[in-house]
Amino acid sequence: MHPNIILEDTTLRDGEQAPGVALSAQKKLKVFDALIGAGVKWLEAGIAAMGGEEVKALHQMLERKDEATIVGWNRGVRSDLETTLGLGFRAIHIGLPTSNVHLKHSVGKDRAWLLQAASDIIKLAKDNDVFVSISAEDVGRTEIDFLQEYAAHVADAGADRIRLSDTIGMLDPKGYASRVKAVKEASDIDVQCHCHNDYGLAVANTLAGLEAGARYFHVCVNAMGERAGMPDLAQMVLALRDFHSVDVGIDTTKLWNLSRTLSEVTGQSFPPWQPIVGDNVFAHESGIHVNGVIKSGKTFEPIDPEDVGGRRRLVLGKHSGRATLKYHLEQAGVTVNDDILQGCLDQVRSVSIATGAEVSVAKLQEIYRVAAQHSQPEGVN
Image (cartoon, rainbow, N blue to C red; front, side, top):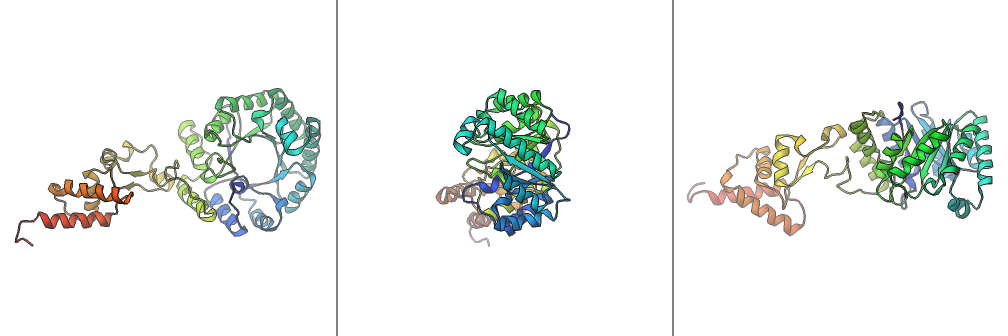
């Protein structure tokens, strides 16, 4: 991998483009603060051409541009870029398509227009002395030879980075890696991975792209984004750390809170089995699992809960065993009579099945208290 891999978060741009998500300036700034607090040093903040609340938020974010590289997104048109530069951005991204499908049906142009437009807008940006990133959008349906021509062209025009956008998430890891390799063969320009999750391969494709020589990569908190979303920030951070010994500078103990901050401001929940940050990731109900975890978390957890700001939960329910009941009762200060645990377990399972949910520790204590009373010999109080 590249010796200096850079994570760039796009929750506030691509993430917010998820249908049904609309953040006020106040909410965007709350997420921004959480990202900076977690150690994010590059982030795509939004789209200045939208005006209104968006510009209000961008103005306030740019007051902290010494803390992180804040990237402003633009369509490949001069007016967008002029608006973004006018706000004081020192890093910009230009979105341009490279596939014939998108050139014809999205912007109604041809490749000759694309090459000229890319040169013109890169020149305008570099004349203002800013970092320039530019897309090859819909890279999965862009012929390799033209992708190489385009990459060399934008590099010669002065772009600092090319973003290989698998816009509809149609590539697998091998296919995405081949695009990165092809660009690296044609030019020495830095490559950024931008992978969508339509087939559930966004994280795998991003890792493959980085292994193929990309330097930058995009993520979103909670994998939020258009359609099926983007590579999840937490998953990428830990996959790079644990599988490739790459530290991208994120404070992993902030991951759970970061995830919940985004969920709160968007009103968008995520599955309890969401990797790294889901409520079930460190929750155990199966009797065999709980028995092992009580002795050592390593038995059924590849990641320590504390490492990502999470906490372990031993759940009472249909699949619990006596060890779980005994653990919770002893934690509550109860001296447990093992002879009545099986009867208590039968009741816990019945309650869980009847409610279709986990059983509270308070309910367990009530069940145990009644069972203990019934187990006493007559006349004993």
